[in-house]
Length: 332
Image 1 (cartoon, rainbow, N blue to C red):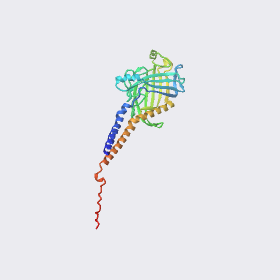
Image 2: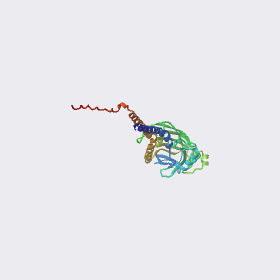
Image 3: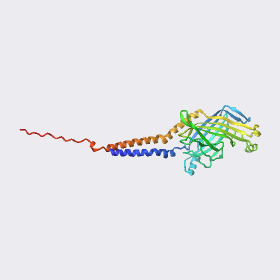
């Protein structure tokens, strides 16, 4: 009976030992992915900021500028691309909508970001774009990979339509959470004019006048490394119009300058969401594999103990004793 129980425990130990690496190296890469229907809205503010007043053609300091960043999963496009790509694909229709202190639109830049749901690597298909212009992304954007490493990554900049290294600076503690801190600096670069502006300037007028738009930024991310999600993001952002004298009376005008930070209520909500997603990822990469490993060792120990008990030497068993009755003396 003990030997049968020992074999059962040994079988369970083998099963648990097999499940530990299976969850980590087989299930996790397939189950951990970005859902195709994800919707996320983030509000960022620059307080105070410098903004170009197109009615007076002067740069003015304003109380604040608000940037509403939305990411909306396009499920229909994801399914269409998946049929040809043969892998899980996410399509994000993103929009950066900038408003001034009066709530009026300053600019809006739409994007379509197409990437692998598991690795966050870009998927190059028709439709990948920024502000209606076709692009070919290299590296990541918006989100870092699951199990982010302490190294530099290529990060796509939507203004320049190019990728550049974003550098791992070190480990930080952000609101009680251990995070990886990254920085990227984009030097002054000539960039395209937004297609949507408060004042419509015909493209031929811009071309004839020689007016150009320049941009520079320092981008900062605090990344939760298990999920790869940013729990905080900031930018020191600058934009200028140059060669503007023919149209605006001055050679250089500041269009926008400010330190952009996430609004407090969105910092809290994103922190709660990341903590929840972190637990699910850790279940696959750490908690369950280690639990199965420890359970396998426990079951193996019990199996060996029962096997040893079933093989005890025979001389350890109690010896039966025979009692001999004393002879009866017949009466004389």
